[in-house]
Image (cartoon, rainbow, N blue to C red):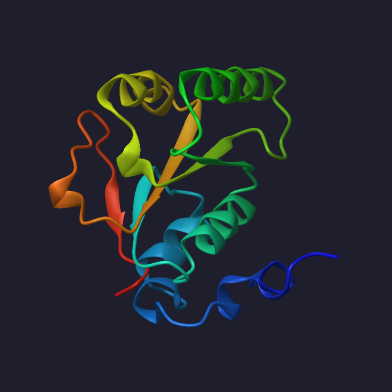
Length: 154
């Protein structure tokens, strides 16, 4: 049986509690998702504020394949593997799940070398990166990854 939190996870934007300034009909994130125009971004907020849920919903609304990794345990090998599989998916030109959304939890823990591996795949569209962190990003350095900030906890 799935854990309670997984069973209660919202499956539609309308079911998400809070963040109405981003997710309500006609608001920036809702518009980007319904138009399929979302790009890579950072989700910032304390634990339990819905960062993972929001990333899953982003993938669902964009008909993208969802891959979730933790920067604590993932390394260069895992990133390359995800990118290789994403490239194959794009080459198959399947209308459903042709793009890949990589949800990278604790993204601030990636060092420069790990970020450098991600960069070409994000730039060429192989991966859409949604990074999540609860850390104060101004104390961490995300060198080359230029992502927009979304603040689920605020």
